[in-house]
Length: 544
Image (cartoon, rainbow, N blue to C red; front, side, top):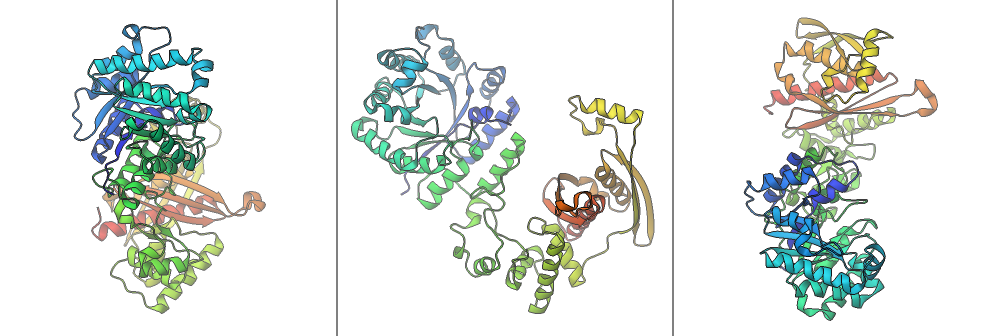
């Protein structure tokens, strides 16, 4: 189609209203710069004059040059009974200095009468006066017709009157909002058609803002575009109030890659942006997100893995490279020799496996999974296992013994408990609760070291790191990102077997390792050792 669709991002405002997210002014600036780099057309800030954080953001952005996007300040229509010249919200919008502003106003008879306590005509005048006032002062106005779809169901005639009032007052774009997120996609399409038939003069000036309370915001947004919307309001990863909003990382690839619309300059960086914004917001990325989740192009079943190795379109609707993602073949008890071969070509390029070796590895994986191991998300442990089976795993270090001591009741513990009740940003400020000693040999040299930590796993990690750093100073770059424990046989209570998965990073790459044992300390330590082995192996191979 190649029709241009303007991408308008609401993340800075909507994500701040999402439970579990709190964006500082610097976070908001970082998000704005990411969005600009992505090539979106409009970036909405928070509520103008709404909070000190919003004020700082708008003030800081006045001195920053966006290369592609236009910054939009956000506010509401004039308060009932207040002249536009005296409304502090409208003045706050003007004070941001942005060329574009967005104001929301009621497009529902029910909301006008029951929520604002005014008549339908008074609400129409509020819309008209607000848009006229802002356009007269050189602003280009997005009018967000709040509750439009619910208002249209109540009274189609009145809902259309609301958007016509905004249009006649000079609105740049009129955004139809499914504020409650309850309008299903097929109804969004029908209503879009009916609106354009009743009000053809606004063709080309319509936008869509969908909430995800019915789980259909992405689909509703796509349907709105197919039926006349030229502006899509979206958020990063769908973050927003309640159940969130239409997801930029789903809507844009669908529109651009599957329907041929022109949305952003390039979809290839989307994967990196999706994960980078999670780091900024301190939110863990949803691994099963369409297009940009780590598992979006993962194949576990042996039949699937074999098929995609022959033709990617057998089980992939788009190429993962088009959004910067990559194919991931998982090795598990469901895998056959073909899946193992495909996986190992990626893990160990240049090493050819014959059918006999592939069969041995496959059976070994299945036997370990019977014991509780899982290699689905633990590629690093899988690589170490395969190297061992192929006789190419280097012994970077040998563990002779280790010992862990958990501190008992003491003054130190009392201090620790009091400190944990405070807001402590530095983890090192906490008192240690465990100590560990390791006896390690590298080649013919022995190293015995001890360290304290916040718990036994932390103490073991520090002791092992301290011992190995004498021989391999590069490991200073490595740190633990995540630590997960799962009890595999809960019926056995404290005698249960546990599986520990550790995620590690060197600041550039991340990798996961797994350990299984009836002893949680041993399971953790096995996963730790695999993690160090993996890093050292990749450093020796010329990795970063």
